[in-house]
Image 1 (cartoon, rainbow, N blue to C red):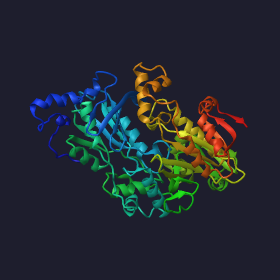
Image 2: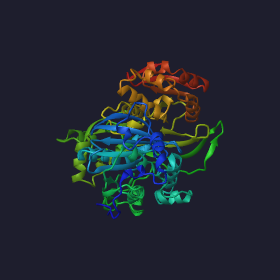
Image 3: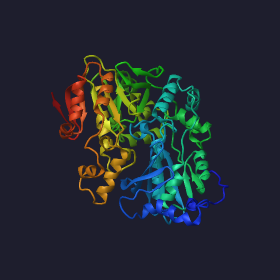
Image 4: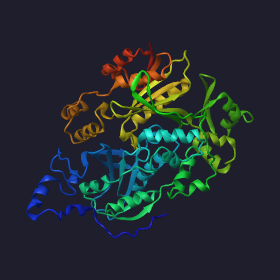
Length: 535
């Protein structure tokens, strides 16, 4: 389906004309700023084109499952958010560019949440652009339709507390928010810096994005929707988007039924933590997380409900088995490994059979969102299970990289997150704290510059690149992270998940923060070795 185009043709390079500048000063203007397209033909690796409020930071190549994307990183000088432009094929001489304006979604793209369709749209855009041969994805750090994760999480808390009777847009309105706070003004700046002149075919379900581009003088000749089958956990959200004007047909046609959180969600007003007043506890809600390795977690009661009449061994013994294996784990719970392709085929033919619900049975984590008045950052903590006084919950401080939100060919960071989740699920109680700071706390700009210098052969190692950038090996604020973690560890005893013993040795501040806050690590779980070292 397309959104019709009636706007007159306009070009991206209209900003090259300076009618208000006298002719004798045109040279001054030229000397002061880079020309259109200068980013694709830089004079030196230190060129940093700036136009409007959009500053170019770095360029590197990302190897994705759909091929190599040349990735350009920009930052807005006013609100400091990053914009990542991922280009595929020849974007300079293309007759038309397939384009996606995509707003960040940490819950689906990093935390494996399945209560929206964001990660599906993102990966769908990568696939379409690769198939078409040329195009560009603009990835904008505009979480929660531009309100940030605090606003988004309070929306989720309110909607879940209402048992999905309130929509996201009603929740936003009740909190004094517009339905959409996103801004796309940086796109025209980036088009000029990259020298893009081809018209766009926009991959979107949202007519507002098309209007935003045309308002900047960018020619949009057509659109293509990116729509996917709803899940029980995003059906209500997609239904509200369709009612607000998004081009979505499946929410009204699907046979999927809405699913509610496993426990009631009780809303609360933001408040400072008594023993750490820098943190404002802003929201808490449930996140349905996609299972790891097709291992479905079931309580004893759920196991009995699924396999009380027809034994699980019968499903395992079929010609096309629906179940591969199962095991009893701590807490009288079961991990049931489904054969997802066989079960999907079975569900298509037998949609009413209760066994097909295993395809959409998530891991439930509770999300806790804090606002830090010191750094102005949002802290995200996920908890699973109700840790009792005699439990030793599994804990992971997970450093996120923005690039790992994309469908990379190598997914080491994602795998470590999945491993951590699996350890927590198997034990039955645990905590994941998400650390957003790329580049070991130096920020995403430093991280991307490190990659650019290494790719260009100007730095032999990350340490060498960091010396050139002028930052330390590790700038993360472990003191803040551990002080917040303490509020989610009932008895001060934990099993700590880390990448390797070597990473622990390098992170002296990490160990110091644990000691200061009297958190006793009973066991170290090293993901690189997948062995557990007893205390």
